[in-house]
Length: 187
Image 1 (spheres, helix red, strand yellow):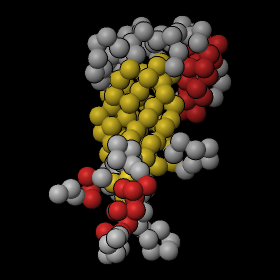
Image 2: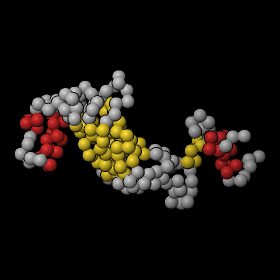
Image 3: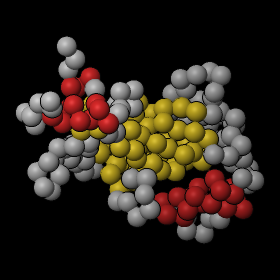
Image 4: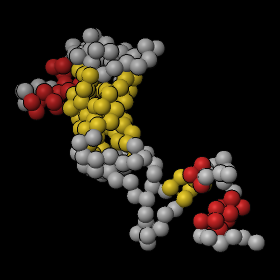
């Protein structure tokens, strides 16, 4: 006997992604370097906002302790609640040599589509999981959700859609499953 759950998944039970770009501070001379303007411009913006409005990217030309990173987080298929935390994965965008010893500066994370709202804020100490890839790291439980992301199993018409796994997907399989689920046995 085979269980239906071994053959299908419920539509809406997929994981979701959050993304962002951020700055990792505190690197021991292994950052992007002051000549990498895509990192220095946001660093200058942070300094202008929090410390000195007159600071420009050119003044940060000797900075080697900051790296620009792409961030991603995966939300579980079961959904999340405001306040829950998830891991944030980081990858260097520029010429940084290592993220070891760095700390991700507080940054919002959004959905992957343009115009998506902020779902979480991420920050924390970067851990390197693979010493052979020091430009990739993780901040464990680094993103805290600012809103619920609920799983939607039932559509507006009150239906649940089952998606057949690729390994068994076929017209006969879909017909057989539908017949059994709907209580109608095919002749």
